[in-house]
Amino acid sequence: MTGATRLRRIGVLTGGGDCPGLNAVIRAVTKSAITEHGLEVVGIHDGFLGLIEDRVQPLRFDDVSNILDRGGTILGTSNKADPSRFVVGRNPDGSLIFEDVRDRVMATAERHGIDVVVCIGGDGTMSGASRLVEKGMHFVGVPKTIDNDLMFTDVTFGFDTAVSTATDALDRIRTTAASHHRVMLVEMMGRNAGWITLHAGIAGGADVILIPEIEFSLAALCKSCVDRSEKQKAYTLIAVSEGAKPIGGQAVVDQVVADSPDPIRLGGVSDVLCHQISERTDLECRATILGHVQRGGRPTPHDRVLATQFGCHAVKLVTGGEHNRMVAMQRGQLTSVPIAEVADRQRMVAGDHPLLAAGRATGASFGD
Image 1 (tube, rainbow, N blue to C red):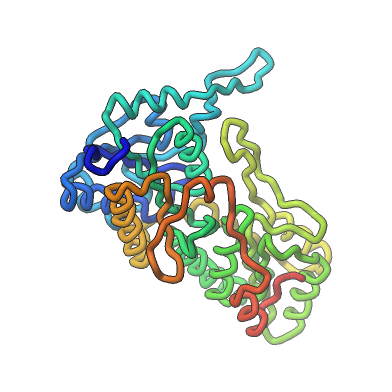
Image 2: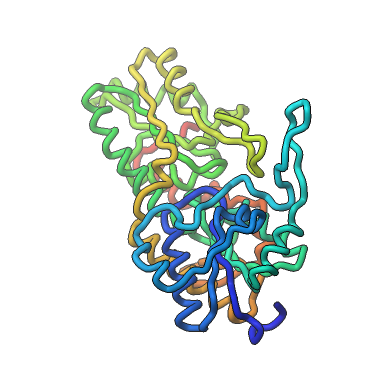
């Protein structure tokens, strides 16, 4: 498809981890494409896997009604289906066999007459799309991740909901921490970026906030807990990112998923710290890992609005012939950036971020 006049049918898929607000984007893309441009829309099941396995269905106006407030995605998703390196079996020694199946994806798109695919996902999904662009497919990306770590966009939908969930957990755990005079750790998602933990930590008034971008000292962390135990507030509430690591150390790896494009899964640092703090201070310590509860549930009004804006702008890019770009929000304005520039990159918390200064000014420790 080389010109907007030949545009007839677009596809939409959701890739990577699930995220509150995905259905709001699907709704916005489908309804705006149909009502404003008379386009046909097809839904692709389970991300790129649907293109690999030819699982595509028409999406009509009524099909996407009443899904604005629903969590998850009606299309399903997958974080293992990389068309350029797809698992097709195992060798006798158990090692995985990978194959480039991008031609199979191209054939599916051609069979269904898909001119452009709106891919809703994070850096992994944008990476997969950029490698299909090399084969001649057309994409428009929509930035999705609760981690808020995509390059060139100030915010991603799903982040606000995840922060709200994490903040609510901190609020609840604070009461039990105070009742039992304990050190309580709440572990949050984010991979190598600390955006969720930083925002939730500030919003929930955490006494200590540990993020991947600031390596912590175990001695300093224990001192903070002991100092608080000797004062009127005889408890410590710690917000810790799953990617937090000690000075000169490594993040705690929960598992390695060999058939995933992003095989390293972090998690468990709160349990490790809980034991270390207890041993060094004799303080009673408990850890809570929020895990996938941060991904689930109804999106906040903020995320519903943002997802709708992103979906409508994606269709504007599609119909305007601005393909192979990702929707972005920069300084409160909708814009777009090349998908290739977003692929395989993460936006981290900068050392001079204003929230770090605000946290320190209000008494929070960052473990350094």
